[in-house]
Image 1 (cartoon, one colour):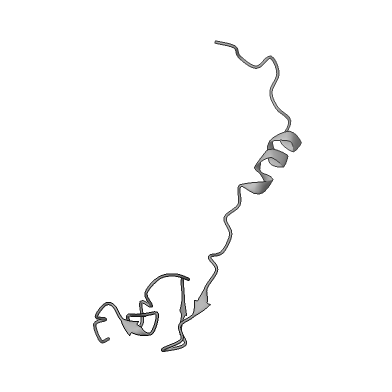
Image 2: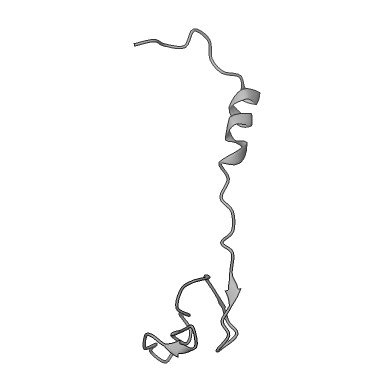
Length: 60
C-alpha cells in the first residue's frame, strides 16, 4: 500500500476543501398561505400542494 512521502501543505488542503461548504436550501413561497417552503414539496404549515390539500396539519 503506497504512503505519501511528504505531508500536504495547509494551502493545498484548504484549496481542495474550498468547495466542501454547505449551501442554504432554496425556498419558495406557498401560493396558499405565503409561508416559505421547500420547492416540489407539500407546505408544512397548511398541508397544500398544487392547490389541493394533501395532508392534515395539527393546529398549534
